[in-house]
Amino acid sequence: MRSTQPFLPLATALALILAVPACAPTNTGSTFTPAAMGSAAQVSFGTIVSARPVQVQGSAGGLGGVGGAVAGGLVGSTIGGDWRAQMLAGVGGALVGGAVGAAAERNLSSGTAVAFVVQEDRGGAFEVVQTNEDSLAIGERVMISRGDRVRLSRATNAPPPPAAK
Image (tube, rainbow, N blue to C red):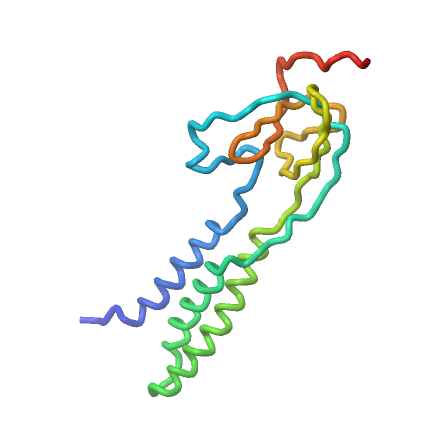
């Protein structure tokens, strides 16, 4: 009967690699947290007066680094002959895996977004940064939703903007 022990580190590493997409950014204008489901949001309308692309700087929250270190340590510990070589390879694998995992998490949480300046119908202007999966443009009417965070979306069938005074 063959032992499954040599395959355990590889299976663990594979599971962690498959889990890395969970670190991908979820802060889009159309993504909601479970806590936001069913919550009321204040709605108003406005017009986009400015838009500029911005970079979202990724951060390493720790999951990628820890996962990479565990996977690297497990895989590394299977290398070598005696216990000393396996221990050294495990420590080296954990260091390399941790660095690679942290870098992967930082890259997956980075991206581009748009800083929109919106002139509200009720007066005043504000800026909000969000992704632009709706392809919103300057001059376009938007619905402003203030719930768990501020979100802009295309205002279909919105009231016309107020007349200039």
